[in-house]
Image (cartoon, rainbow, N blue to C red; front, side, top):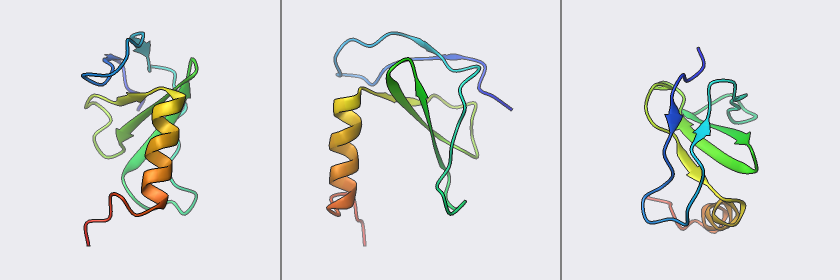
Length: 80
């Protein structure tokens, strides 16, 4: 079921609009594993926990998303 709330932007980030995610088309990884889902909405990227879609989504600007993806590719978030 789609999220039915308007989500808030990340704390401490540049001003972002409240996005209505009720009709967002959420996508998971191409392999169909994991709990992270993303949606592209009004020029922003929303990310949420797929098993808890009622929880707030994180909202990224394109620049923030790029930095996140580059960091993930570089192993910045590898906890092992």
